[in-house]
Length: 557
Image (cartoon, rainbow, N blue to C red; front, side, top):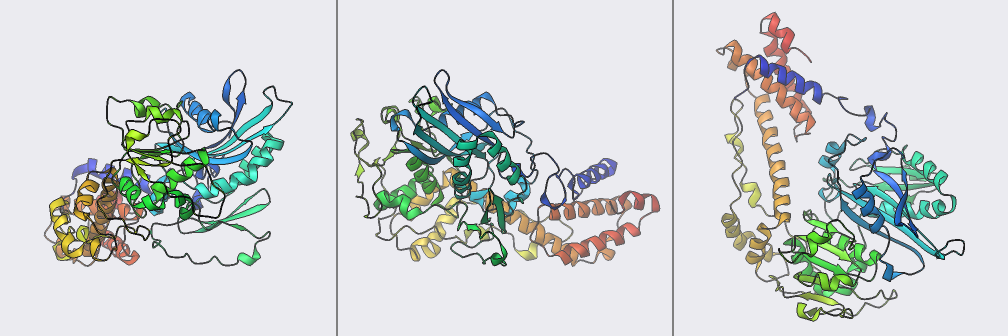
């Protein structure tokens, strides 16, 4: 087993162990935070109030906590994305969501457990380091005391977490109260959220706010698709009775997809392959719901392309997405402004939704239409595309991709893992080898959908979604290899190995083993605690056999 030699390696190892030790760089023990607003930042970046000013237009009038800094570019994005387009002016309340890029470089989060959370969370619920989600409660009512004659204001929760159901439910509680009582109400709510426990995947949490307890379960990557989580205990002891959210993020997909059920096959393929797609909707609520529903239908596969649930002509990426000098990027855009019918005519796939219907009857199903027909503002609802699906249409709703066993075959055999050599490499993914396995082990054997599965997979290999899935699986396999290597070390005869080794070789072995223990605990490798304990005892035995000066340096840290 190769290891860095010399004093510098020893210093590096000790330094890394100090940085990796419990509590180093973390807010405080037990997942809390001693920093002001540290617990709030586990859930939210900030809360913004956006109003309409006759002279300035949309303007951010309040950011809370007060010391949270947004760049001017981010403020501009929030201003325009938190108001519906002017043409869709209807009175009352509306809720929707948007997503925008972070600008101004990476921020140091007050909440320091992003790595821990992302490792345990379902892949689709991981914190996004480069984008923010905005969850909006917009109110427009007649108000004679205002010059323009209307009260227009939005309350926006800005977060890196895609918890659309939780944050929209939270807005339903706090936004009406805020519009009546303004700043003091917001300060009180933020103080309550700052007492919440952090979101820990796999746990059911009770989150008190404004006299209501919201009960949620944070999904874990260990959850099996379609399984029901265990019911929390002692629920009857909670007073008042909690507002239980069945899911923090899952939308009612049947309701969202009602107008496009006959196109789910084509839409699913477009999303799977990372194709550019525009969703033209009558309102920000319809736009954002459809985009979020589409991007979620790949689960358990993570949608790795960009997506904007609500996009306006004022967005900083408007020119990038509307230019005709290059092919449209792999992004799903949700828009409401009819102006986009002309500016995005060159996009290969456009889904136009009709006006919202009353609940009850299944809406009339829109047809596939040629892109050339999407030229006028009164273009009818439909899927405008020339895309030909790889799989044949079926009357049943689309089923998820089945797990393939090809990836498991890339793992080295367990007998090839020996304690005194670095573990063997994972074999590279060969597309043609994988495609050869489809004939005998492909999804067409158990899935009702028939068609060109090989062609679909070839296109899928070129998409960001395959790249994201492959990186995740490769990382999991690497962790498994490291765990198997530790098991092999724990079962080896260490004393026999060190007998004929030089002092330098023994020191190198100790450093390497210490490093492996630190990595196993930091990355929570899938290895039993007794294995780590045995390796720790081996280290202590080896160190005890060395001269006293080295024992002092290599001893317990």
